[in-house]
Amino acid sequence: MKVAFIGLGIMGMPMATNVAKKFDLIGYDVFPKETPFPFAKSYKECCEFADVIISMVPKNEHVLSLYNELKKDLRPGTICIDMSTISPEVSCQVAKELKAQGVELIDCPVVKSQPAAVKGELGIYVGGDKAIFEKVRPILECMGKNIIHMGPNGAGLLMKILHNGLVGEIQNGVNEILGLAKAEGLDLNDVVTALGYGGAQCFYLDTKAKNIMANEYPTAFSVGNMNKDVHFAVEVADKAGKETPALRRVCKVYEKAMEMGLEKEDFSASFKAVND
Image (cartoon, rainbow, N blue to C red):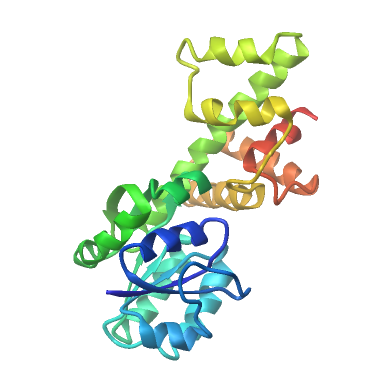
């Protein structure tokens, strides 16, 4: 299978690089970049070259714009793998439109952040036709260590949104407790060690405590992206008629973080929105 990878950002570049180790791949981004694989001149070149097109772009509007362009040149039988985190409804709309011209799309959003993307150890949630998923599984396995088929189109995205909603709630708890410990004069190194002795131990605390203590937030996953995702989670809750007060509190924290100009910093910088 020949692959075109569109969207070579902080996550897309290492993901594409890993796929290129096993598959014939070209890449494309609206911003020209130095790549360890051939860089395409246009969307049309991607469509003409590839059996499988992977997209990794930021928001609903980018996915809609991208596939409106791709539809002009996509060949019947092409498989599209959208790994962006967007609204499930938007993804299902795009999948329906593509299917009408003989093109299959599956949604495959990822969890974990850039270090896992570099190692090829992302978690990948899949929504769409299971036979199509199995056909492209070898490509996904270049990027992810844990891959699960969640159901029809949109189900992968729903799972990603639920995942990040829970991450936001866990994160907010860590931010609040570390801020409280600091205000009470405890040594944060000791606090982090002590929290790890019991049920408060968690992945977020293990991976982000050093950033928080150093007040340095190199971006692995941005405040802007997490803000988008937790607001998607509230939209899901609203449609389901669920109250989710903790999730709504997280949204308020991220709204404040955005107002503070933290959009491009790592999402652990939300600590500043809780404690500054």
